[in-house]
Length: 262
Ligand SMILES: [Zn+2]
Image 1 (tube, rainbow, N blue to C red):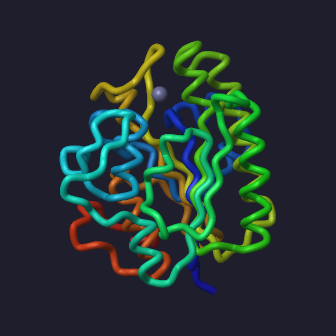
Image 2 (cartoon, protein in one colour):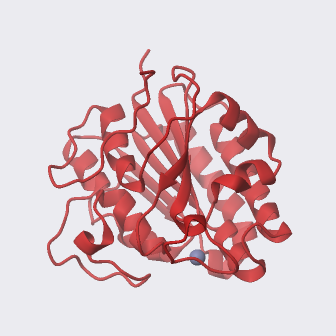
């Protein structure tokens, strides 16, 4: 049986070196048995909304035009991942706890969308609340593509610093959510765990390696384990399309990640 669906989980501000430092057993297991791109690169500015727009539209911020965390309509619109999947008859679901992400897809692209406020509940509580809803929907409806955004780590990084004890505690909590989402999940799903950017000190947004380097962890029993070089946040939308058997948009700049053994 072939992989035919994708669950994409994004942990905001997750640095590759935090995967080991946090000490979570599932993170260790995915590093060991998954197909892991540990030197993948995000885009400049290494800021949440510009990076997410690049993830969902497979072009750099100078092309999509979203250069800060304030959304503005694209002047020369590039078709996004969810619009592309929807046009091919696929179902998409989005779960997030940072409201700015509501603009990642256009009206009518989603089958199901859910926002749980990190600002109101606090991200430590919003993460598991959101996860429970995502888990229930994955179980009941098994969408072709699901995106789950977990915001706690970034908030902890800004408060106490990247790689601080509070940041690593937020990382462990996020991996508890990932474990819940993966538990009992159909092998139809390729699971991808990634980040939008890293961080250093109490911030991010620069072109320093600590901000620009992101992990892309791919998990499915069919995939050969390994740690290939390369990878870009621009490659994620083409990778999702490749798994779902949908043609990528002609304007996209990324390429599917090499998931099969070479
Ligand atoms: Zn941030």
